[in-house]
Image (cartoon, rainbow, N blue to C red; front, side, top):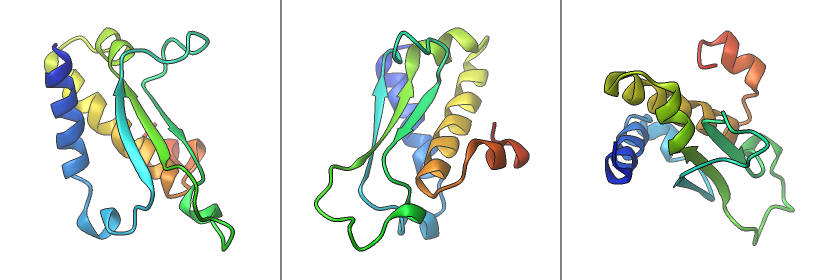
Length: 113
């Protein structure tokens, strides 16, 4: 799969986020990266930042939170193009959930592991 096609899948996954949630997302940027840190070669996505639930009056003038979706591990993990579509959607939702302060344990309980 080309990078452009993968980026389009990420864009489509972002478009499925309900408007009532996207309206409250704040100071976050989503990127497609080729590979994660070599220490975590199987990582499909990563949220880096301060979740909305932890922000206070002190939160001003900071760089945007960063959501990275990793193309290489996703393509290696998936067997079919349909698997890639599904996994990108799950990964995008998973990382956006971290922006809202939902931890991995709760995401697993909700089926978004």
